[in-house]
Every structure is written in structure tokens, then in C-alpha cells.
Length: 179
Image (tube, rainbow, N blue to C red; front, side, top):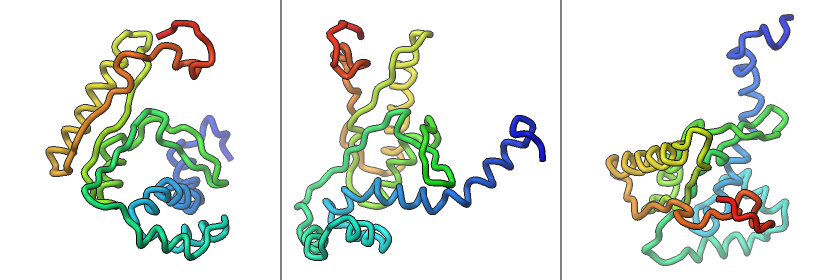
């Protein structure tokens, strides 16, 4: 058997994907779960079992399904390079970087809920070239325009935060004055 360094990476990736599909589907179900409940969107059976196994009662589930918020509603989603994850065959996750991007992920939410969309938060650290944040802003804006031009109702865009990124790199735990 060839070492991993000599093996065809595509074959390694291909062998891992089928074993990870069930885990990825479950994690995606969890990704949608809070919104499914809040928007009165019926969950799939495995998510229903997950809710029951974790203490939700049938009556509580039915409460969500019969008490959806009143229109007009909007859906907001953030997008950062850290949003997407790769799932391994054992169910572990690791950051994947930008694989699908804001546009495709937002299409998933729009197909699921049919609600107007707001790009609620994004940002990128200004890197060593000095143009990484500007590049990210242009790319995110292009994603939003593409969605709008394809007929998905867009109600807003937020660059977080435009003016006060001081000490966010240390989660405001230290007063260093870093931008």
C-alpha cells in the first residue's frame, strides 16, 4: 500500500466521503434545528428523535409547529471563512475554509424557509498583503448581488463591524488597542 504522501489524494478523499455522509447529514440537521423550530418547519424523523432523546416532549415540539411567528419575517445569516466544516468518517469536524461560500449556503436557507434574506454579518482580518479584508468584502457583496439578481429577495448587508474591531482578536479579554 502506498504511503499517504504518495497516494492519490482524490482516492483518499473519495473513500472518506461515503462514511462521513450520515454524520454530515446529522450535523446539517442540527444546523437548521433552531430555525426549523422557530419558523415552524417540520423536522425530519432523525431530528425529531434527536429532540426526543435530548429531553424535548411531544407537546413542546407541537407548540413550535403551531405557533409560528407572524409575517413578515426575514432570515439573516452570517458568513465567515470559519463557517464551513469538513466531516470525517468518525463524525469529527475540522475547519474547511470556504468551500461552498455564502451564496450556496444562503440558497439552502432560502429553499428551506422561503424568507427574504439579510447578510447579517461578515468580516475578514486585514492580512499581510493589506487587501484581504477588501477582497473579502467585494466577494461577499458579489455573492449578495448574485442572489438578488437570481430573484432571491435580499433586504440588507452588514459588514461587522465597520468601525470597532479593537481587541476582538482576543475576544475583548485584554485592553491592547489592537485593530
